[in-house]
Image 1 (tube, rainbow, N blue to C red):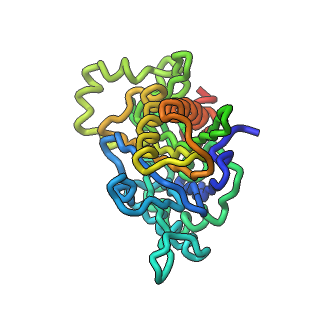
Image 2: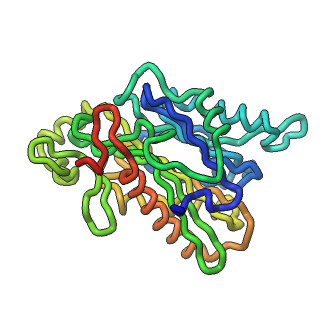
Image 3: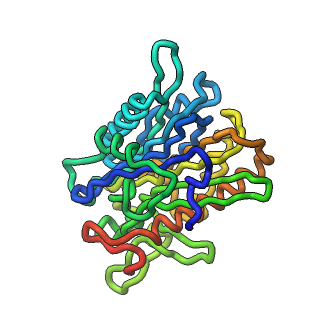
Length: 320
């Protein structure tokens, strides 16, 4: 069985997809609660409840993370996640009721599939209802409309999706990651090869976005670019962390993105990494935890593009 974020006890993952509109929602649920943190580095983020994850904010209990397609419209899917959790009696106890805490992030997928439909509350609710301890990868949920390699415009992009991975340390610490890669840039593997990205439409293969951005015509087009992108990830671990520590975990894990995506954290991306600590065992030193989380997320990013399949008139990396 492929290592996955659901190897962390207490973590459930669910997807809901609209394969006609090519959009969807993915939820990472922690029904028993988790301490949450976040690191936002992209220039165009679309998020909900990220301020609450600050170490200076009161509530530290998170019950789910919603990852949604549809740009700002897609944040509505988080309402469906809140509704499902509330219906099941899950949330932060405020005395008169329980309030589910569900931070969320969105990707821009409106340039593939339909432009009049996006992830909504119904898809968020359906993703929760489908949540299990197994994780499907590829073009499902929030990955249904994900693409990468848009330096040459959408016509030269390739299909991407959702990827996951996990690692268990010798002391029993488990670190898992789930990611949707919808990056402006190319995805590289550990060996320094482009495995998904902007296609060379004349000669075949990949064009290398880092070389393309040095061309005058590409630079002149930047002010009028309208493609929006974003890589969203969730890190989960079974150890006990404070809000400050889990925020540091998200920061260290985010370093996987520049290892695998180039260019990254651009004004066209809303790159955001959430982190969840479920508190089931003592934590190793943050140096160990954060470094392994970075490796785990790097592997999940690779799988997001290698597990994808063609859709919406775009090939997957496996087809190039």
